[in-house]
Length: 76
Image 1 (cartoon, rainbow, N blue to C red):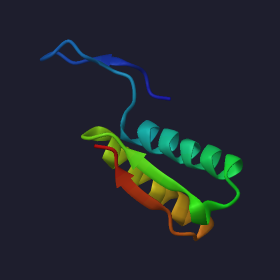
Image 2 (image 1 turned 90 degrees about the vertical axis):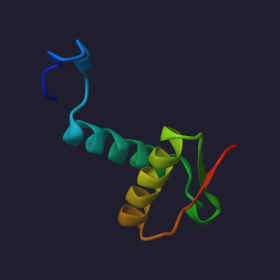
Image 3 (image 1 turned 120 degrees about the vertical axis):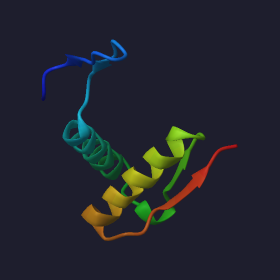
């Protein structure tokens, strides 16, 4: 994992870079696959705003790994 950095402008600490985030989401996708053998009935629903994108990205990873479409949606 890359080292944390403090940005000069905001003082924010970067915990994940893009590659670390990709790996984390891929690992979450694998965990979901391991715990849900009937992926055809799986629905990933995200909470607006960022949760929807996370659900979509994890769904895309599951589809790439298992070649099974996963429904995604929004909890509103």
